[in-house]
Length: 82
Image (cartoon, rainbow, N blue to C red; front, side, top):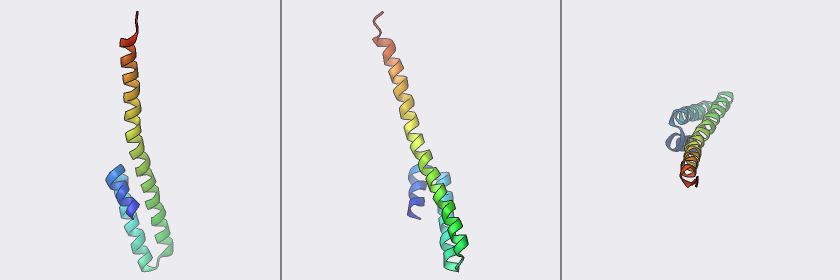
């Protein structure tokens, strides 16, 4: 459940929120004794956390790469000695 909160607050909140809901569903199913339901909800929560982390990393790395390329092209134009 803790990683679902981290994914929601620090990465991509839509899938992080789904992860929190699924983790809560898993906890409730386990408390009722539904082992299969708890395992299924837990797997879904884990998948949502992974998606949140991936989107979070991509949303940070992609702009950095784009800016690096843009600055590289921009500064390369002014450094040419034609």
